[in-house]
Length: 438
Ligand SMILES: *Cc1c(COP(=O)(O)O)cnc(C)c1O
Image 1 (cartoon, rainbow, N blue to C red):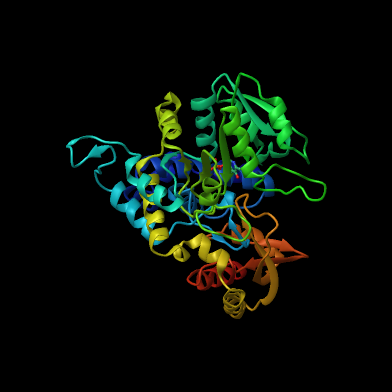
Image 2 (image 1 turned 135 degrees about the horizontal axis):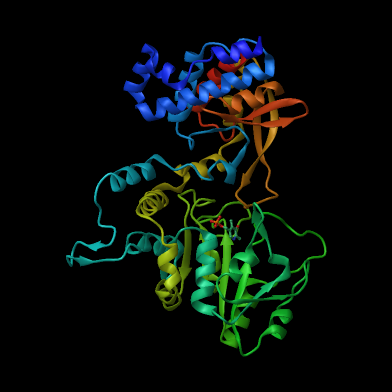
């Protein structure tokens, strides 16, 4: 029986000659449809071997395969985890104003590196520098691909083959096995660890300074906290020591809040306290595109800009366009930045969305705890509400269009509504209903 079924499978050529496949080939191109036909036959063969039964209609299998092959792999996801800056889900969703800038700049030629007044070569750094200076109070700014890159670049430019002092309490892993010390070692600077995991005093830095020291680096304890018997020097202490010893003090802030947000240190507050350079991400609390930003003393920024590595790490025009669009929101009304809106939204509005979703899908509303994420404010718990549905829906919802990612708690799937926009509630509801009826 099994052999007979296997022998009855058509060849790729035979399939391609059928009317259905000729139509598909016209629509999607011969190459892609041939690939789909081959995959469909392979699937049918596997299914016969596994079950010994009829594999089902090859035309259907192939059409589903065509759809899978043409669908983009990178796509929109509904974030129902309640984690606002979710690194695996693309961190910050961009504001409409930022997207508009991307569409305009990406769809045409632009003045990316052209000075329209002089009619000559310009710098891609000029477009956002002024807004960054104005919003942070810095003398100068530089934007590259991401924060790990900008921090490494700063060390390469200011401390190559020299010593960089960093506290053992700040040697963090940022995710997926990537550790800040390993990334920074790529700069060519030599990391010198000072203090202990829980306590580092200013004297520890002072005692470690040699004539080969170039820089004091503080790495924000972004995604963890050491509680209890713990001590780290203040910004003022580090600034004073750096200035007394002729060293540069760099503050890697990571999340980089441009405005006051709960307990998160802001970029301008650290600059005002005397940090020579502050580095931070564009797509964490700032709420913009992936980018690494350094702000601070003009001579140090210029030295960093001139480092050869800068050319390898530079930000592209789409990033700069999205960043400019996001910074423009800060200049008008920061509360409209999506990430900040989600973090600051009052609980009753989140609850209203959870009730709306529960009404559509027949689920129940449960209280939950949302998080800032992105290595910021790890202890902050944001009041939140979720629609609870059956846990069996978790996998089908991840495979849906659009996929929905929630969290499993005590045998239920919670769809946290802090990270769903008002517009996404209906869509999420319809998707749940469609998954149930499959
Ligand atoms: C997130 C983070 C980084 C890495 O930033 P990316 O933009 O992801 O490269 C580096 N340092 C700190 C302190 C961070 O929080």
